[in-house]
Length: 269
Image 1: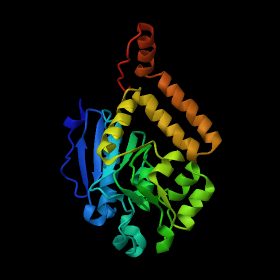
Image 2: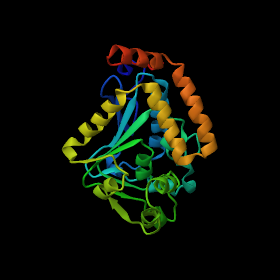
Image 3: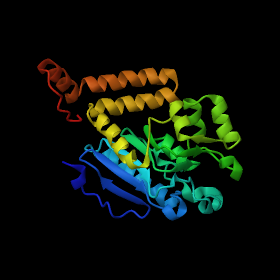
Image 4: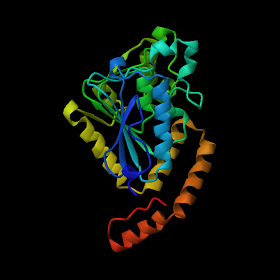
């Protein structure tokens, strides 16, 4: 069944625009342009609902995340709420501000950066699996300017992905990283003009959906362990994931399709 026909109210969200792009790809747009798409408690909650729904819906293979407007993808936390009760109102059920960081997730998320990504907005993008950016986009972590810390993944993600001097300049000095430089450093997968941003993200999504969904999800999980887990735990998890894949119908179908010289018909089970 297409997830577009699933029992899910796409119109219920106040801070997001949610729409199916195909039977396997969902588009989620951060929709607080008047606040530079900064996330408040409501947006954190609604993003958490999207993560839960997509993880529970087998038909969905990829989620593309972008922002409303042309200037800003996401400016991070809404500072009006961040300074109320030490920002506790922004916390989700897992104790964090970023559902992509704290909620269990195996589906592929692609960030389509339509504008600048600052603070928690950059952290949100970094917790996506693939990044596409408009060529004029800037990335920054200005938390220390506000006596805050980039604890939504800014420190851990950037430290794993970029050279230490660049990370320290961004966090300690508030340095700005331009999209093209981020691409040259391997932080961004594609840089494109504004007109082709969504099509570039959709092209990546299509490439992902061609592959065996269970294998993609397992590989995605293992890659996260490579970045942030210890080697011993990773070795055990790799073996577990491989054994599960070898017991799947998709594994059998892959071998059969290879023998018959045809494209495999993935079932996701």
